Length: 204
Image (tube, rainbow, N blue to C red; front, side, top):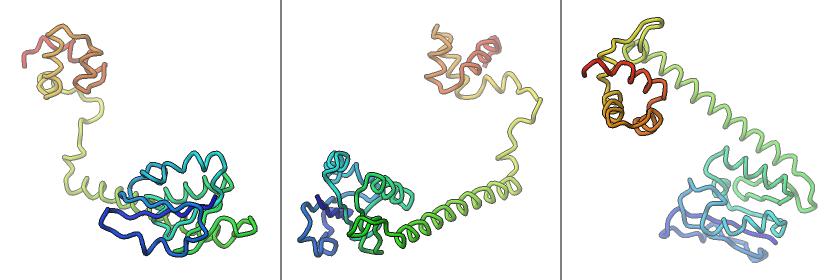
């Protein structure tokens, strides 16, 4: 079975630009949903998953590469999974395919996807580098934001018990609740709850 998959973001948008030259397809899928929704979670495309898994669908085609997934990483993952399953994947813009009409691997498309993957990885490393640089700059300009408590120093008991979560934990403990219950309710570790219990003689 040959399937053409189309997607537009809203009900008001027209899919006509995408669904050209589709006469030879057995099925045409049109989803009107946000692009952040993964391919197999879309209202219409999700119905094809079983047909892909059991080998009924042998050819899937898209008008544009961004109709295939949420982002480059997601697109490459879907492409690789379908390739392993032997499903022919064709994208019209930019044109690439995993297998040609003879069922042979398309080496140029493989190179193109490899380049796209490398670009995506490069962009990811740049973002991470910028984040690190931003943190280092913030440390220099606003050192108090990253100061924390110095190593091998003890936090003042009163200050510790006066924290909002500590005060909340004390209230629950005074009601007879267990440390595990309080830990889940307040969002503190069991060790911290134990520490609070030991220091509860200090009035806050």
